[in-house]
Length: 471
Ligand code: F3S
Image 1 (spheres, rainbow, N blue to C red):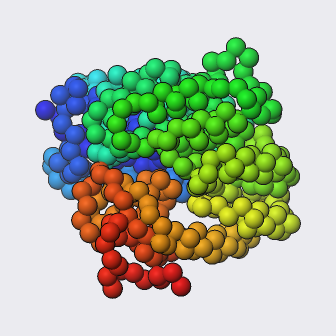
Image 2 (cartoon, rainbow, N blue to C red; image 1 turned 180 degrees about the vertical axis):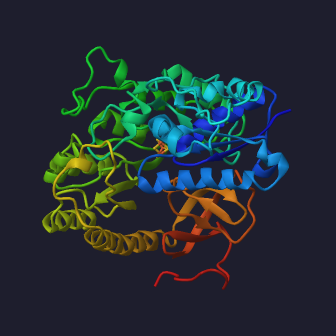
């Protein structure tokens, strides 16, 4: 039985690809193990979003290769590079990693990984021959409900990839060139997968794609003009999907991640408000608020549109927690743009916020723009916005103290509320062992930075772990 070890890097979308690979390896009778030292094949599923992700991917590849020299068994080990970096750079990498890598596979080969491994063992690589490449043109693949998949997340939460690819023209982003045009699954396919996951005991379904709000719009007769926000009253495949997921029997949350602001509608706001299983949480990457920057980034939105949308969301879905991300240091950004962004952060008081320093990526239009910002300026802008958010986050956390909250227990002593997505947001620490994967009712007793401290409802606070009690 061939033993395979897999290192999954990058985002949740890449993790789903890793899960599909593991599912197919199991189906082919191969054994997937965590210890790379004992494996005959190591797959590194890479990320290529920004320079630091490429560096991380390369360093994992080099480390696996170096360790191959350690034992006789590992000298025979095959190293396969998969994922976004392989899809985009396999030609360059096949020269620069000529000796290290045995084969490159792209995004569309995740279901073919087992026969590819068999073919690597079937024929000896000739001395000095280039690594094999199994990448065939642009990515068009999309998984279905019955695609073999072995989940790598804890038993109680799962990611569901509802679409793949992206049609947005953001000038800073390389992902559409890697992952291809947007293609959605059908509502029926996603619902079938969700039903199965809930049956298996999943308590949180995290819907993901490059742009979740665009779900189904790629199949419209008349595709939405990217520069014009969609008809706000029109139901979309996403609203249909949410309503159908909401009526699946069982106790679970549905969480919407990666919603581009351009395709929100009043109908979507109404749907979330009317579906109790949809978490009162949305992830809506805004990237900036200054019209000049939104124009240069080609975000298909404006400051006025964003302010109005957020107000409609807050009014339409009481208690909603909004997570967003901003980019600072984009080419041409002035201090006035940063002032406007800071003012906007202060006014909006996002419950969750991440700020990224712009990264100049080869192959993007922004990389060729004039007025690139110096690393020092980027640092200063990042520190300024993050310091502002830190104060807001403390106030948000303080506002929870004394409140009752329903949480999902991730591991002994650690849980999350609806306002916290797995691996991205804060946690709720409960110093009592509650069964992982169960919902519990807790009362918030204090907070630490971005995390909350709580006790099960009915228990009195002890002196332990109640730092920063409502001051
Ligand atoms: Fe994700 Fe990195 Fe690819 S962020 S989509 S794994 S480039």
